[in-house]
Length: 264
Image (cartoon, rainbow, N blue to C red; front, side):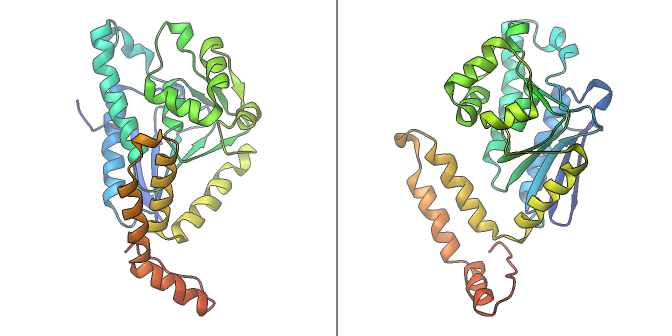
């Protein structure tokens, strides 16, 4: 599977990685090639210490991502075996995004449907414009939403709402999504980029090791007790208190200035 495509764009500015789903003529439907390129971009962001957080968004003004590219279904998902192979690639990318140690923000305009919503749910924060529309139309296609997506959905909205979303295949507007906990914030279209910029500015200034420890601990807290890696959680906490950044934070507080954190 090629990892090169102009339909996934990755750039960095002012400590923020930008991952753009660049398929606006198809309402940012996501192909297998795009998934592979997305995974490669996330690896580069993870390895770049200058990147403190990442924003994923869709090109144009119609969609964050309208879902998987249905035009590929006949080729790549026509049988159960073919669907399994497709799902393996898709799951791998979403697992990679869920394991990403830096804050990940989904900036959502327009359609956020099916597999597109699956991608948005791997983010730590979801900020939506008031023109956003959410749905999981799996029941209209006779396909099964996989366990990773359903787990993320249940964690966000609870089992009863998750059943409603999946069984009815209904579309929800941004305010309905906010009310059920599917997104963190809804703003006017004209204010979307500014709202996300406010969040990223805060994240870029905050201590990377502290944010990593918080993400890790929260991700384990929602697991069953027997699945939590307490040693990993404790190691992340110790890394904070043993860091240069912890000393910088204390010094900056005493000197009444902003701390400058370096992630070490």
